[in-house]
Image (cartoon, rainbow, N blue to C red):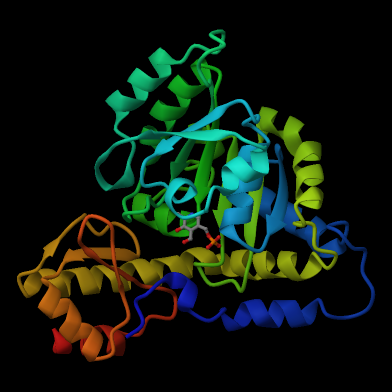
Length: 338
Ligand SMILES: Cc1ncc(COP(=O)(O)O)c(C=O)c1O
């Protein structure tokens, strides 16, 4: 009954097999290997574009901070939700990587940015006024930190307005595959076609061992050399990149990533329905692979005593996360304990 996080799940066997398969002979290092070259073709197919560059790191925090630092100078700011992972959970990594860039926080239900608050912030932005820190990037998260999905048209609306104001658009896609399933969208529709310039595409929570791809689309490709330099400088240019690339290859093969995310989303739905059927209120609609439920403290304690692993969430609800490895038996056991 481990619903602590999708990061607690093991890596999918196909991922480990793929890493084993590329573990033969010598290979060019630092991303110049044949597996990276093959992966480029795969990503082109999956995202229906040739107009991109990419890099891989082993953690979402590193990918987010690297991506943002290419677009936000030390004197600038990133506009994001007040509950965004880059704000709450990364110990200032975006500021650290950008050498001093800050975050400007916006409200909104379920960690989705309130469109009106966004427009107000954009309208108030005055890059020419030396006494204010100007906005350089809009960062959205999909799924959001509260498990809600931004649909393509919502991302487009934010991106159009952000770009008109000269901001780059970053998408934290730690749970991008879950968002694809939830939105019924194509990878292109939820990224470059909707105006995303830089996507941090998480595959670790989906089922990889440690593989987070930074994708630069279109005009943002101009930042690729800077991204590589920053990756090197911050220690995110591991020599044996083939093992990171092999993980991504395995995840995209036969659409494994979306199949695994589909399973995680379905299990979360089962769990959410189980809570609701027993009279418990969901703090947010269950749209992806996370369930946020209002549990009285004694009930939460009872579940923990029965062996369930989950965490309290700011705001008072309890968060349960399902993964590719979540079993029906775990959900049945949790609901029985409930
Ligand atoms: C929305 C979101 N972004 C980024 C991350 C960062 O991932 P990592 O823990 O790999 O640094 C997480 C991890 O929980 C996350 O939930």
